[in-house]
Length: 181
Image (cartoon, rainbow, N blue to C red; front, top):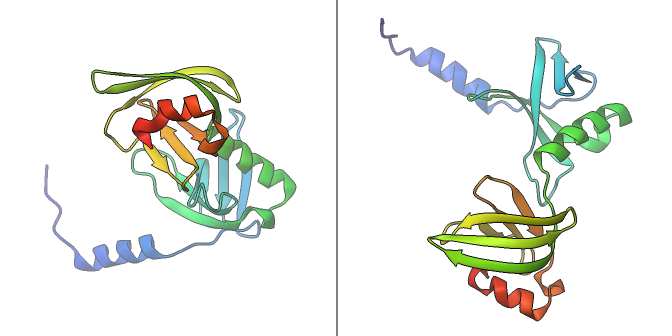
């Protein structure tokens, strides 16, 4: 295989493209739902049969700054929707559907038990979606404090669970969480 020669001008051009912010609105971008239920995008320059919608600030500003990206391992940003409110109801619903699938986060409403074994913590909890069991790595960064009372727990399969206010749990449930707080 022949090795490509280093091209500084090409590298500078690629860097400039990556740093450019492309704001998307319905004048420049046409979003549709595919037959398979995915999100597609047609811009003035290109058709994207499938794109991803990613919140840039998922916890602090979930309806603003939505990054629209190509799919695949080397996903690239196509553009940013500055504010979901600026979109038509139809388009907003399509994108919100994709975001709700990506950011599915059951709310933990009660803690039945937490067991610590072999470097893992095994949770048995009640959520707004029903009873759930999951595991996290001990000593890792799987429990993130968003505020003093709000936490997000990410399990070993990268599913997210939220406790909006630990003070709403019973004292016995909070005691089970002590190791993580």
